[in-house]
Length: 149
Image 1 (cartoon, one colour):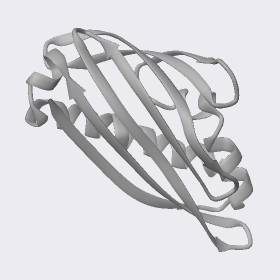
Image 2 (tube, helix red, strand yellow; image 1 turned 90 degrees about the vertical axis):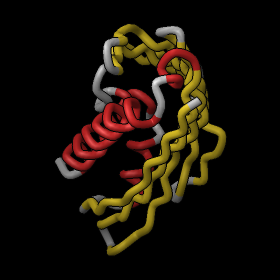
Image 3 (tube, one colour; image 1 turned 60 degrees about the horizontal axis):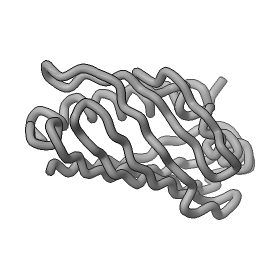
Image 4 (cartoon, rainbow, N blue to C red; image 1 turned 180 degrees about the vertical axis):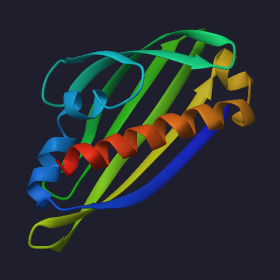
């Protein structure tokens, strides 16, 4: 099993309520993640995502079920989920906390924790980490751009 952890923060010139409402809509965030093919919102707290991934020589589709385990408007939220595919599994938790830094600016503090098992997990963090890091960095960059439009 391989474990990954990422965290960071960034500032946007948008009010905290706006940022919170954007981030708790699964379609908004999922559309910015590389490889995501579809998002199905089941109810306000539960959703499914289908994504194409490539880790080393292994390429395929991952099906993810996720739910908001916690929502504290307009301050924070936490999502937990499980993905499977490509002879692998992934359990994850991700979330954010928002801080008002001015009348219409917000600091977004975010984190992602994941445990990957099966074939991809057996490759170890040395192979998995660069791929996961690229996906996270790309997503955060696109998120910053989207929130500053």
